[in-house]
Structures are given as C-alpha cells and as structure tokens.
Length: 459
Ligand code: UDX
Ligand code: UDX
Image (cartoon, rainbow, N blue to C red; front, side, top):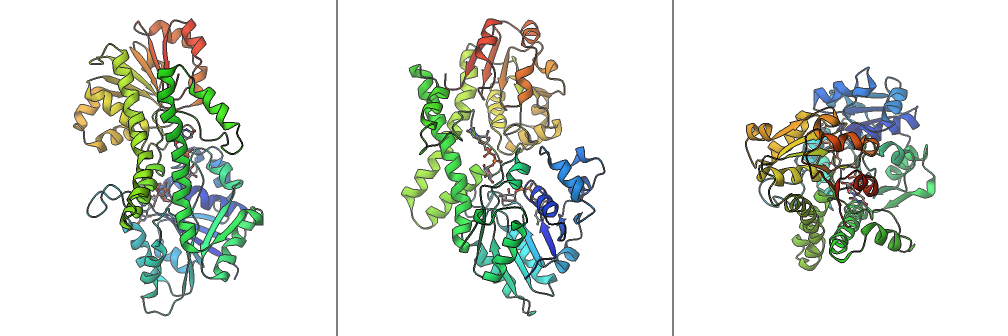
C-alpha cells in the first residue's frame, strides 16, 4: 500500500507544521491540510510567509518550499476527505468545561465530528490516523463510528502521537527522537512507516499496539511536566536554605540516569499539553478507581499552580505588601520563548493574581498580540473586559513598558531580553527598582551592579 494523498483535519500548531514537513520530505505525496477556520486557512495561504498563523523558527522556509507543489491548505473538508488515502485528525481536544469529567477529561466532540464527517463522505478505503492527543481507547470509539456507516468502506485506525515541542517544532520534526505508530493492521502501519521513512531512520520508528501508543503520549507529557514540578519544588527549598537551584540542577543532571534536560526551574510550566494531558491521565486513573495513581499525578499540577501563585506573592511581599496602583512591566507573555502561543501560560495567572491587588501591568512580548493578551485575561472571567483594559496596557516597544515601572517581571525567556540596555532602563525606573526573574534569564551580577534589587526563582 503506497500512500499518494494525505489529508489532515486541523491546521493548528500540530497539524500545520507536521504536514508541512511531511510534504517537504515526500514530494510525491499530495498533502492537503483543511480547517473549519477560514481566517486560519487564509493565513496559511498568505503570500507573505511572515504572516503564517503559527510562528515557528524555520517554518516559513518549509512552507515556502512545499506549498503549491504538493502542500495545500483548504477549507473544503469534504473534497479533501474524499480524495485522501490517509487522513490525519489533528483537531484540538480541550479539557471539558461542562458535564461529566468537567475540568479534567478531554473533550472529544471535535474528534467525533471529524469521524462522522469522514464516515459520511468516504467512498473508498482509508487509513485514519489519530494525531491529536487522546485518552486511551479513543481509537475504539473512532472505529465504532466509522464502521457503522454501512457503506462498505474499510477503515484502519492508527495512533501516531506528535512529540514536537513548540518553538522548536521544525527541528523536532526534522530530527525526532522517535516516531510512534500504534495500530492493529500491519499493512496500514507499514504505509505510515513509509511516509516517515522518507527522512527518519527506520530504527527510530517504533510500532506498538493502539493503546500503548495512545497512553505513551500522555505519559511522556506527564513525565516531562513532573520533572519541571520536581525542580520547581526544590526551587522553593533552595530559596530558604541558601542553595542555588541551577547548581542543584547541574549537579543532579550530570548523573546520566537522571539526565540534564527539563530541569530548569521556572515560574511554572504552561502550554496546551502538559496540564491538559495530566488532568486527562488523572481522570482516566480515577475512572478505574486507581486513586493513589490519580493523586500522585495530580500533585504535579498542584505544585505548578503553587509555583505560579508563589511568584506573584513574592512580588507583592517584596514590594512592601502592596502593588496597588504600581506599574509592573511584564517581559513576555508566551508560555515559552520562540512561540506566539499563550495557552496556559504562567503569565496569565501571575497577571490575574497581581490584578486582584489592583496593580497596573504593562506587557511586552515580541510575538504575542494585544488582542490575544486581553482574550486570555477575559477568558478567566475574574473581572470585566473593561476592567482588564483599564489595568493592563500592551505595548510594542519594550522600553515603553519599562519606563517609569516600579518593577519588572520576566515571564518568558525570550533571548532579546538579555541584550537590553539595562543601564538606561534602570535610569527610567522608580526606586527601588525591582526585577523578578521567573525564568532565571538575566545576569544577577550585572543588574545588581546597576543598582537593581534582583530576585530569581530558586536563589
Ligand atoms: C491540538 C491539541 O491541543 C493537541 O492535544 C493535539 O495533539 C493536536 O491538536 P494544536 O494543533 O495545538 O493541538 O491545536 P489548535 O492550534 O487549536 O488547532 C486545531 C485546529 O483544528 C484549529 O485550527 C481548529 O479550527 C481546527 N478544527 C477544530 C477543525 O478544523 N475542525 C473541528 O471540528 C475542530
Ligand atoms: C510539550 C512536549 O515537550 C512535547 O513533546 C509535546 O508534544 C507537547 O508538549 P511544549 O508544551 O510545546 O511541548 O513545550 P515544552 O518545551 O515541553 O515546555 C512546556 C513548558 O514547560 C513551558 O512553559 C516551558 O517553559 C516549561 N519548562 C520546560 C520549564 O519550566 N522548565 C524546563 O526545564 C522545561
């Protein structure tokens, strides 16, 4: 079975970059990415590659190479389903905000809608690939919907979770540690293996059964997040004992059994995946009455929440227990550097906490729009949109945010912050001039010599 046409439903942070690289590396396979969101598709088709809806270093070059050749973006979902041999489902699976499992379970309504649409449209056999992160045994539900259409079409379901991290999506896709394919039908699995074999060495392509593949994705994210919460727990201990968390990280990370990655203490992890996937894991464990397992993983989230509010509390306490009317400049709003994604970003929760104390916040982020920042705050529902706009200002010039500020809070580790003219910034700020570095990004020695009061997580 040789795949000639691929369709992907969902042109988001996962679907867009993944399909762009698959098309780049398989010039003989026609790849069409479809989405219900017309504006998003229009942006993927924009002649100006700097306007792609997803900002990822290197993505413009990949899209520029493949788009129009064998990579297409479209809103015609039915046509793309009809023509494809292989269909990836890469729609979002947010945490449920209603009903059973509210706040924990993954909402699968978009996945089910996709399955029903595929079932309604398909006239020939298809391989359906789950790219979205899903609760274990979703494939079963998918298969049941697809198999009950009664029009004689055969569907093979594969699970192929994506492990790319935002900000490094293109390098991660070009050079993955592993590609994971779960499935039951050997021929269908082999067809997908061949797509990846165009650039990924065969020994890095792992094949498993469906459930192992689905579960592995949740577990990978849970383990990664757990490392961040583990080091963040230690950061609080370091602050009271005089140890330095970076030194501890380095010391333990050199143990090859522990490894050096994902041991950077921070204001807390964000992103669309970590919290959602752990909540999902917790929910699944509780469903099977495995409460000790559920409690264990839930603690990773609770510690992360603690870390975010601890950072905000530190700011308030240090500024003489009141931030009312004080100007606090936020450097960064994205959940990590090199992305315009703000989902679950720690900045949102730190801002919310400070706004409860009537602080005035001025935000600068190199890639996040004012519209997105207000949307994130409004979504919390803590205060009215008018109130958010009264208390929060968003600027496109960092020096405007910093001028006249009582304090600076570093929320994202953008490289450009390190190169700012800190001497000029110091002159423009109120005294004492506080810097709260939630990313341990800036140079303590330099800032202290300039007269800043510098606080960093875990020191
Ligand atoms: C999402 C999930 O967050 C992740 O867990 C999963 O692994 C892959 O899908 P992401 O690509 O970051 O990741 O989501 P998002 O950027 O929201 O993109 C999803 C896209 O699907 C959106 O553009 C949305 O418009 C589209 N969509 C959603 C459809 O086209 N049809 C639908 O029925 C629902
Ligand atoms: C993550 C997984 O890494 C990826 O494999 C999966 O496909 C999706 O979820 P992503 O959320 O894009 O990727 O970014 P990641 O680099 O994992 O960072 C997640 C959060 O943890 C960020 O807020 C980051 O700042 C934080 N983090 C990460 C730390 O605070 N310290 C670290 O040492 C590493």
